[in-house]
Length: 468
Image: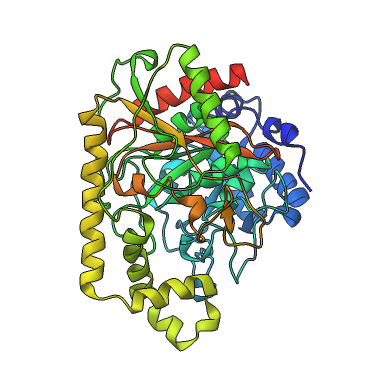
């Protein structure tokens, strides 16, 4: 059964209003945390967004923020409750990666992004569920079970950031932190009516934390209800860090106005794949509305190197999983989700040359992605975030899309390439499919133009909201 989504989305005021009230003494971090804890108690038995919530820890964190406010500090996220995905370190908390292998792991320190949230006054209220090792597009695992979509609890919120998006979409918290190595913080927001920002690779520091199986493409991502909120959180999180070898300095925001930007509209992102008719219809409607509003849209598809579908790049993830967890899987395969076991088995069977070819292909994808914007005089590109809406929670993925049989990643084809391009991409809500499930519009810009992407996304969000 679905929640009342209108009530859920209105349960929290905007993040800036929460912080303003706490900074001004009209509310307290303790009061905001108590509100979050009460809603988690009421809803999470059905949704299963959280793997752990420690009320005493939450109260202690809130008390620290209230003490800082009383001492005269003014904080951009004062008292804002936040959920952290269960693969991002939070000092002193059990962080499991959704895996029996890490069921007793206690993080020895905060990830830099978590430390920056805490410094900005946010209050961590819980750890949110992920697929095992954040490595599949459905949020279920042997340790914590399945997370359900608040729009329809028979459906999945997608993955791997299903816990974070379910927590925000249901109103248990107004903010969550996820990760994205193939679309994990864009597709789940699309399936739950939220905003998910994957920044340029290196824009937000990654780690300290677990070793990654994804080799230089994974990002930490804010998940919010509106683009303006994502922009506030991005400003808190972004910036170089000495501990992240991939840390990057972004381009300054340009003066280019959204209506003057040349924007590619690509209904399939240059791929020969099936798209659900409901998704295609919503995308066409969005494009028509934006053109009527004065946005400059041009029909233009990116070109990709041969073999650049996920099958060609999958060796990177499979070999990474095998390197990190292959020995444990061989000793006791029953401890690991069979879907992940299959990926590990594939990785163990790869030759070094197979992995090298995939890494070389990833580099070529990055070059092709950059040339797409340069060669066509483009500022940005838009298209669908997913090929279909959410599907039943017990399935790894839909068996068919638009009447065409697809593999378990058929729903996920439009996001991974932009991890390999290292470019910023954001998913914003853009409408509902015929069954009433939300869909997302993906917007992409050249690497480093994250703040311009957020400005454009906010302008598009406002136009689509005004015309829905």
